[in-house]
Image: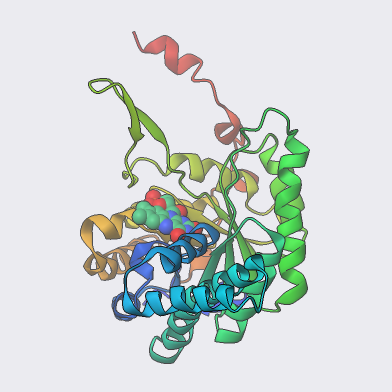
Length: 344
Ligand SMILES: Cc1cc2nc3c(=O)[nH]c(=O)nc-3n(C[C@H](O)[C@H](O)[C@H](O)COP(=O)(O)O)c2cc1C
């Protein structure tokens, strides 16, 4: 029988299907199901700095009893004048941050206790201090690896591309100072020179690059004349953008590649592996069809491998990357040229 096992971020996976970071990976119950259904690994929902700030506000406003006691504590501290107001506020906000983080850390440690696949934690912060702090705590909770979810929209007219990109390097440098578990970086595609930057990022000592996060995109409602959001979930034809970049970067950058976005079935998993991905991250498809489809996808890959006489993933991984195809231009061409002329 075909062997689907593979290595990712230095971890041994039974197959290259990783359930990507999302709300689906934030509960222990789901993590158990994900493992039972046969996933190779899972990335937990990111802990967001905004989330921590939001929870802090909740602490200060809520009527909930436990919350209220913290409001009272806050009032106490202020009324006793033991601290300056700002210090009291810091005390509370730090508690709120701890509280949120502790819930997250329990998820990591509980998951490690009851689930037998690698648990990859994920953090999304915007300040160096928080990155360091969260990263160390997550490592101590037992995460097998850490994905840094960094999605910066280069929309500031006063910032050059290099200033914008420097932030990624600063974050990696700071986090690496504090943790020893493998780190992967999940990015979007807004880079002025993606191949060059991806290569440089891969030389920082990260173990993997996840291509790409799928951004929230705004849309316009022409009926009500207002801005709203576009589809939260990808569809099954959105994988080609990632496919191109996986193929272009495979064998060139110095870390693993995880393909993400629009991967909904065994065929697109196989395509990404042929392009050179080490693993795929899948999310939207599980929102649409739940985790029950996972065994079918895994057996579909196994059947395809048997049909093509591939006994292991390494037999075909990267077979159709840019480096290995006869016509590399097929990945670099962006204009339809002749194709256009035949479509009238
Ligand atoms: C509801 C939802 C929540 C998500 N939350 C996170 C998150 O917390 N951290 C993260 O790195 N990516 C998050 N993502 C992005 C996914 O991990 C994934 O990169 C993206 O959805 C593209 O993959 P897909 O086409 O398989 O959905 C989220 C996606 C969805 C749909």
